[in-house]
Amino acid sequence: MPKHNERKLSLIWDKRQKDFIVKYPLRCDGALIMSAIVSDNLKWCLPDDADNKSYPYNWKKENIKDELEKRGYDLTTLKFSIELKQPKNS
Image (cartoon, rainbow, N blue to C red; front, side):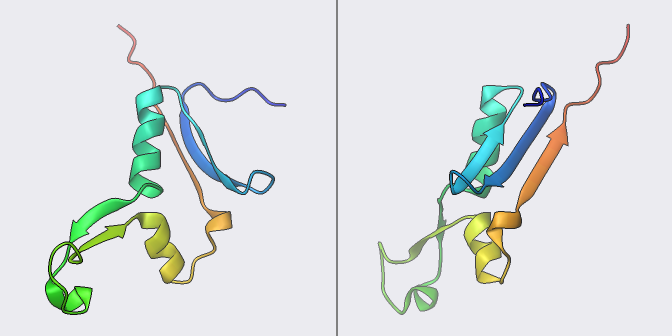
């Protein structure tokens, strides 16, 4: 198995586990990418968007993953990666 790049933050779909796998150089960065892409975030919406219901129904859970799926994207092809900048030499 190839060694994971210790400078790369990545998120991919794993077919065997049927879930997203996150690799990270810093634990807080792994939590950030999971929170931004996969975790539910609450968003306030107008009562009309909540079928004319008032609180608490005018709060919707949303995340980028669900929005992409609604737009017809195949989440099993989702791949994200970004590398840390190279340290500047002194």
